[in-house]
Image (tube, rainbow, N blue to C red; front, side, top):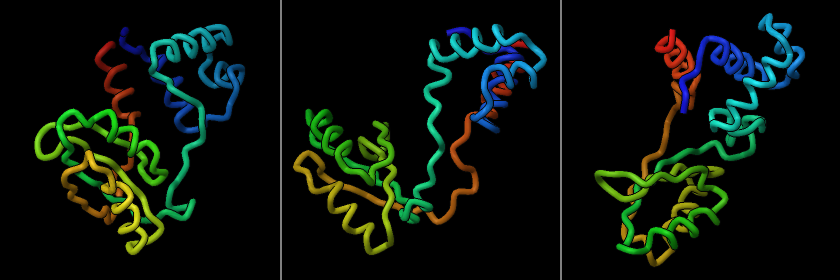
Length: 158
């Protein structure tokens, strides 16, 4: 795992702002050779820095405006089964194993507060889940982001 440099950071920022330009357009905007951009992209993908090129989707625009976080306590030895169960629930957007209170934290979405109860029932309706605590998100003032880390990593390398 190597650090990123200023050119990597500029390339990542360019794609984060507009993921549609091709390699030739990126090379023009960055003032470097097309081969350099392609080699950097290939290296960043191989290292797992760039994990995909899919469009960013908004659950609210898809009809799921309610976001909640559920902290789950699970039965010992049931982790794999619980993970498989939660992966089968479309409204579970992500799942993390955690330390502290609870064993897993999942981000879920629903069509409404009333629908959230259905989703929670679906999530916890599995024998391996002992207890759940849910908090509804009211606002997302700092959405998921990685670009500040890109800038910091490039600055550390300079």
